[in-house]
Amino acid sequence: MDLVVVGAAIISDGRLLSAQRAEPPHMAGGWELPGGKVDPGESDEDALVRECHEELAIKVRLGRRIGGDWRLSERSLLRVWTAEIIQGKPRALEHLELRWLTPAELYDVDWLPGDRPVIEELAHSHPWHP
Image 1: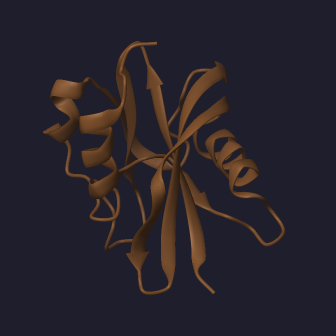
Image 2 (image 1 turned 120 degrees about the vertical axis):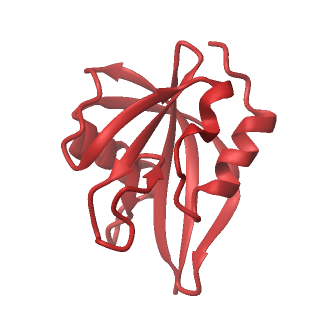
Image 3 (image 1 turned 90 degrees about the vertical axis):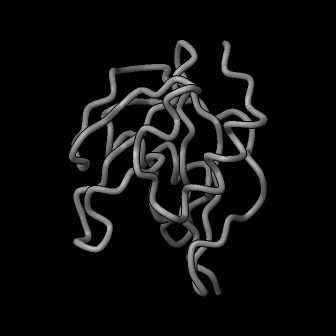
């Protein structure tokens, strides 16, 4: 059975929130969409709301799912939703840095390989204006 990782494409004022990983060492410094692993017995959506709270100290409302299952490795896959912040201001509690990127700046950061196809999808299909 695949390990499911969930990610949030948090968009505010026409900008996408990106997060720079602090660990593990082979991923440190790479950029990703915030999120994390789904715990046993937890829905994907509940996991994503929980992860955004734990990693960023914010509450989010999930929007639409982006694409289907994005393969991260032989044993794990990524599922991504758009999200809007309904409470709080993002803080890098578990990341090195956070950056808000406009559509023109999407490729100014070095996205981790697993996130790149999602970013491509966002770049070409997502309405960036609220």
